[in-house]
Each structure stands twice: as C-alpha cells, then as structure tokens.
Length: 346
Image (cartoon, rainbow, N blue to C red; front, side):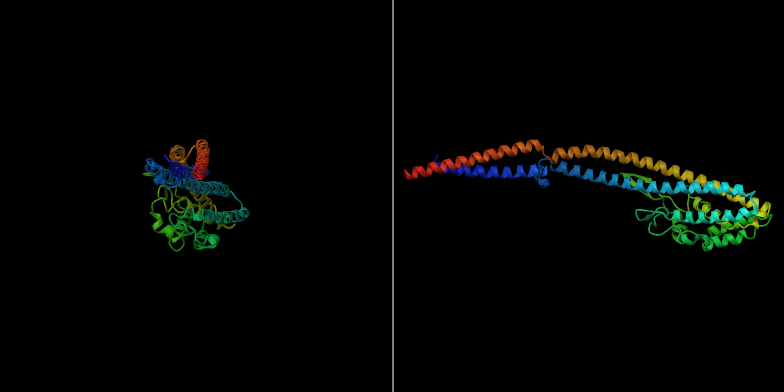
C-alpha cells in the first residue's frame, strides 16, 4: 500500500476516534450514557418505562407528603378544640354552684373561647382552609371576628335572657334553632348547602387507593350536621357568653341550663376525639403507602441508573485510552508524511 493510502486510512480512523473521544468526554462530564433515548438502543424502551414509573411514584409520594402535612395541621387544631370543649364542659358543671358574681367572669371566658374557636375553624394550610370542604378558598365561618356579636350569638343571647326556674329545656332548644337556622347560622352558605352532603376530601396515594383526610367545620365524620362538634362548640360557648349574674340565681333553670351545656360539650369532646382517631388512622395509611413508594423509588432509580448512567471510573479510563490512541495515530500520520516528503525529494 502506498504511503498516501496509509495516511488516508489513518485519517479515517482518526475521525472515528474523535467521535468516540467526544462521546467519552461527554459521558465523563455528564455521567450519562447518552443525550437522547434513541442513543440508548437497545435499552431505550426500558429507560422510558422506568422513567415513567419513577415519575408516577414520585407524584404519589409528593401527594402523600402534602396530605400528611395538611392532616398534621388539622390534628393540631382538633387537639386545641377538644381541650376547649373539655374545659368549658367542666366550667359549666362548676357553674351550677357558682355565685352571681362568678357568672360575669364565666361569660368573659366563654366570649374569648367563642372567638378562638371561630378563628380555629378558619385555619388555613398551604393557602387553603382546612375545614371548609371542597370550598378551600372561602372561610368556613365567614364572620369569625364578630361571631360573638353576630346573628347566632344575638339570637342565643335573646333565648338565654328568657331563662326562669322551669324553662331550661325550652331555652336550650331555642339556642339549637339559633345555631342551625339559615338566617343565623355561623357557617358559610357552602357548608350549610352542598357541603352537607359532599364527599369527604380524599387523597390518591396509589392506583385505585384513596384515603379520606377531609374534616368539616359543621359536620362529623358520621354525617351529623345539626349536632356536630363544630356547631355545638359555637352554640354552647355563645350560651355561656350570654349568662348574667341575675340568671345565676334562677335555681332549677340555671342548673338545667348548665347541665345542658356540660352534656353538649362532653359529646363534642367525644366527637372531636373520634375525629382525631379517624384522621390519625388515615395518616398511618398514607404514611405506610408513601414509605412503600419511596422504597420502590430507590430500586427503580438504581435500575434506571444502570441503564442511563456510566461507570465514571471506567469512562475516565476509556477516555484516557482514546486520547492515547488518537495521539499515537497523529504521530503515525506525521511520520508517514515525513517519509512521503523525503521520498519525493529523493
């Protein structure tokens, strides 16, 4: 073969080596075998499938994390509401033997608790109201700041003012009407309308698996609306906020009123405990599913790495070898060129 032909063959080899060198340099730089799926043949389809499964599992895992954060925020509020229900129920029982001077202090305490409960029911997490059902942009208690002087509280105060020695049951029934009537309810039109029958908010944590995490301000998990824990808290706090020293001397009427408040608060505290237990069970389910997704993601990412990622140590060694081969080829080309020139001159 002529020297010129040998030089030509070396040039072809050098072009192929440069392509391989460029590819090796990119692999060492990025850690990836290829820039596009098509260059991963014959495992391109497997890489696509693995990426899809990773994305699906990540979406479920992220949804579970958001749901757990929301549930945790709701649990904090429910714990405080249960404390208030238990405390106020105990205060109502003590109030049966309270002197007239103590009634005024009781009313002030209940007034402050009423405002706190309304504010707690309007708690938001991530920009969404926790206890408003699917209407996450509107407060469950629209006028929480003025709940202690709003339509419900005013109607309840009017009912309580009629208390005498024998009509405690009638007064309590009138306060229930005040807390549920459309004109005086403290809750939003959505909660008192379509919200009373809508499905509880749930999170999709896996294919075909949804877990309920919603809590309604005016509705229990069992679907109770009229005597739900939220309504009973607001109603009975409004009753106690309306008492006066004069009412405390009404004998049987006063005792019957306080018994009614204590019973209702006890039931509200029990309902809140049930709400917390059900939400806690949901949190456990969500956490367990999320953990399974995350464990699976570790395996999936390992498999994807074996398809898409290079062994950096091996890639670096290959790069060094390619550089040496290309340099040797250039030296051979230079040597042949000098021989060719010498032959021409000779």
